[in-house]
Image (tube, rainbow, N blue to C red; front, side, top):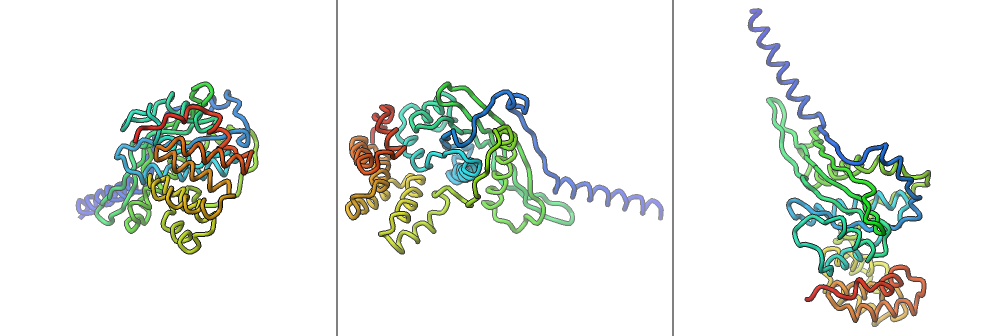
Amino acid sequence: MQDWRARLFVVIVVVLAGALLVTADEESVQGTTVDELAQLQLPAPCEVTVALLPFWDYKNLPRHTEVCRDHLHRYFTREGFRVVPPALVTAVVAQDTQLEPGLPMRRDDAARLATKLGADWAIYGNILQLETYEKKSLFSERKKAKVSIKLTIVAAATGEILFWRQRFDTSGGHGGATKRATSMERTAADVCLTRILEDFFAALPDHKLQEEVGSCCASLAQGKLREAYEADPACVAATIAYIQSLICWHESAEAESILARAVRCDKSNADLHFWHGVSLYALGEADQAQTEWQQTLQLAPDHPYATHLLASRQWRNPRPQ
């Protein structure tokens, strides 16, 4: 009888240990230390413009890169940084001839692109793993997520790396069996990026956080933006929001067609001319883009992005179509 009870006890201990392993999170971190951050004397966020460059993804899945960009857009906007519109970043990156296709972005490329976009810092990185898997035990079946991301912040003027962190996390297991894989991936990326950046944001000078407005990246809400545009095509705000999502998903031809019609109907709107220029540039039409940006400045002389793009000569040699 005692042998039977002893064996049962061992089985119970093994099962409980397995259950704990399922629910426990794992993590590993490397990169810039808190002491190194303290020596940087970072500027106030309101003084810095950042460009969120596309992350390299190990599976080359656009949804992974867009999820990371959306999270980062939300974080940096909340902290008070000026963030270059993601659609403008997409258009400029798409026409850059010096990037090596299919390879992770290099530091000098990131600094060059940030300069081209008029940003002080470039934020870029690599998604090394982002996936869900099922963890089974004798009594349960739980879904977990693995994520490994490397993030780098580089100064455009000097090419100096201000901060970098690489982090690996596993999470989930608490009622995760019914969650969709894409939802778990999004949550896992959010947790990983938040933990990567928490020390960096803590090292910033005292500043007021901006109001959180949820998802800021137009590319992840394309369906809703399309519905809003189709409900009122004459609404300039709805038009611009929708075409930005199109450009982010490399559907610039459709964006240009919509904007061409909008400009004909409202020739006095500077933002419509600016974004028409962006869509043209994304299609490789640099001369026509320049004409639209010049028109933008005639209507709004202080337009920040049109001013920079026309002053810079780096954008004038787009990728051949």
